[in-house]
Image 1 (tube, rainbow, N blue to C red):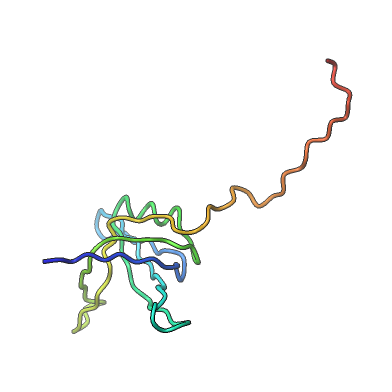
Image 2 (cartoon, one colour):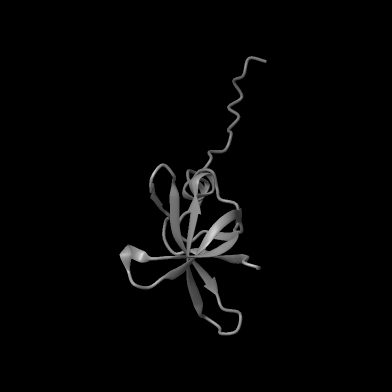
Length: 117
């Protein structure tokens, strides 16, 4: 069967890092725009494990644009009687503009003319 998901959207808040057992899981929500209804978004719960999750937690923050690829999985939240779906993220890509390295302005070089050569 086919179970592939590709989404592009913005993080609604900083990713949450959890450690169930010896693994690392990062959970986040992606706001994905609707192509048919203007000013509408769908909020999709996503989870990434181990190295992929650690990469997301380190490099992505609230408001960042990202592209994810993975598959759908169901889970039971807190021993509930129902199941919910989340995207199991296998690949993640930067989709927004490159961030600045520093917020401090760089001072221009001023030649004072007193160099010995």
